[in-house]
Image 1 (cartoon, one colour):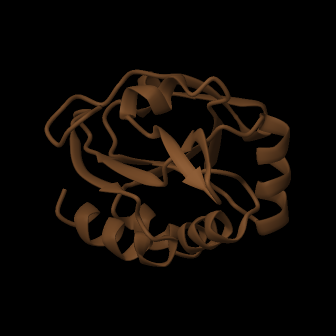
Image 2 (cartoon, rainbow, N blue to C red):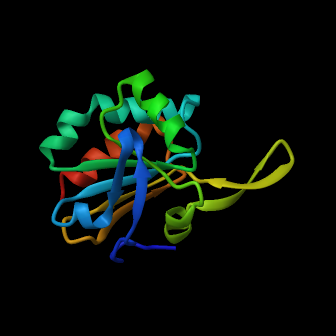
Image 3 (cartoon, helix red, strand yellow):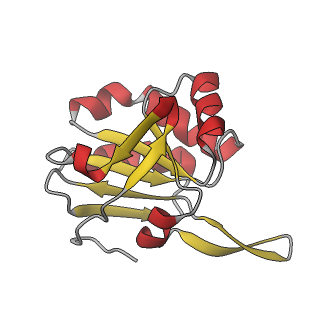
Length: 153
């Protein structure tokens, strides 16, 4: 599990639109990597659409946004098209990056225990250092927290 002040884990993941996104391509710029449980569900849609709606503000701060879920790329493509999401959605089907960030966790729902993605976000500065962490973040509060922290980079 990572902490504030740690170097962000290196990664390379398949992403929507036939892209691959990786830490090498992000060198020298701040970015937000946010983990979400499942594309096109109510909470995940609220969070993604809020980020979409604030893209100009986040872009002014120089922040690149990368959403990561265990969904396959095809599902991410449909999610992005359906809601006009114009930032990167990456697929972590084997939860390798989620394991590095500590967001692939044991969950309980209706008495059943299983592993899944914890809704968490990590703000990484231009030097590749984690500057803010939000674990179990509420979708409706997410963008305001990120915007405030990113403005201090």
